[in-house]
Length: 46
Image (cartoon, rainbow, N blue to C red; front, side):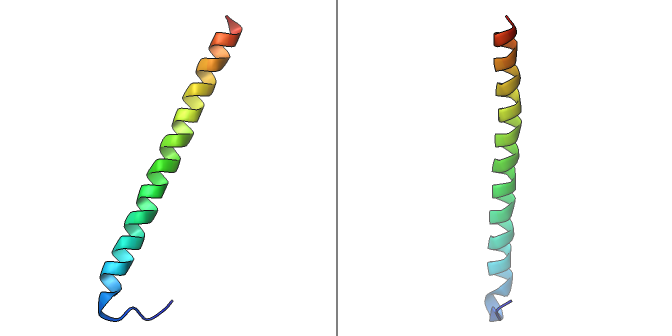
């Protein structure tokens, strides 16, 4: 890991925030995908 000096806290906080946002977006996408797939299967069954 590079030496971030006096800005280490800010940089690492930004990285952590970005990773958290990505995780939330991926989770929301997976959840919606499951919901849409179930709805499509219900429509196909009639």
